[in-house]
Length: 210
Ligand code: B1M
Image (cartoon, rainbow, N blue to C red):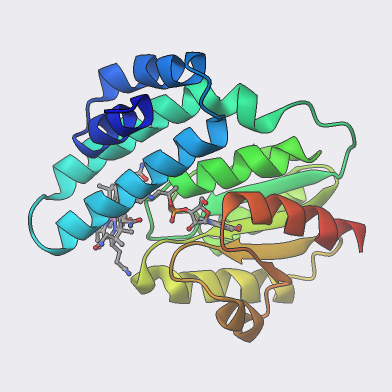
């Protein structure tokens, strides 16, 4: 079994204590950080599928999430690098009712890497909390909303609409997460959409530089 396969197996089975070490070993063997990350994302897909078919349950999903987060910690310095410019402050969070944060954390890391100061509001973030963060922080140029549940898409819509109607100015809104599409982003009035963390960083830079 290759080292990346070992990492994937341990993420899938939620072996949080082993994943960081295995990720480091995979790097030491010459594997690219992006390939290791991709492997872990695939494992989360398998975990999701097994949850859908009733082969595993919420506690196992949670353990897999913890295991992946440990691996991401090791990869973080390699994925982000040093930002060279300042594009302002980005307020990021997972929308109200939604507790998924791995994708949001990856998006945050990648947006930071292109030159934003990040304010991470965490998960289950109401529209009001996003608006307050814009008021309370200097030079907010971007708001990034993540959502993984179909059932929290109305909260994403409400967040975008409330921000647009708030009278606050000077920022763009980017949305993303597995159920989000470009079509939905257009419909709810977001300024941008990205399907993954890498393209979120590219889009973020493009939105505030426009
Ligand atoms: Co949940 N869960 N979960 N879960 N969970 C999913 C999302 C699900 C697809 C599993 C399934 O049924 N196959 C399903 C949602 C179905 C749907 O609505 N369409 C689901 C469900 C149903 C639930 C519960 C309702 C289960 C229950 O209680 N009965 C419950 C809801 C709790 C809540 O949020 N209120 C629940 C709970 C949980 C845990 C807490 C146990 C745990 C999350 C722990 C954590 O995040 N700290 C969990 C997990 C781990 C998953 C799966 C298995 C993995 C999610 C993940 O981290 N993926 C997931 C199945 C799956 O994803 N296939 C599932 C890896 C991550 C890197 O990908 O987050 O998609 P992702 O992020 C990507 C892109 O989406 C994008 O970039 C990221 C990286 O490239 N992206 C953006 C994300 N945000 C972006 C923002 C952007 C741009 C791009 O711009 C701002």
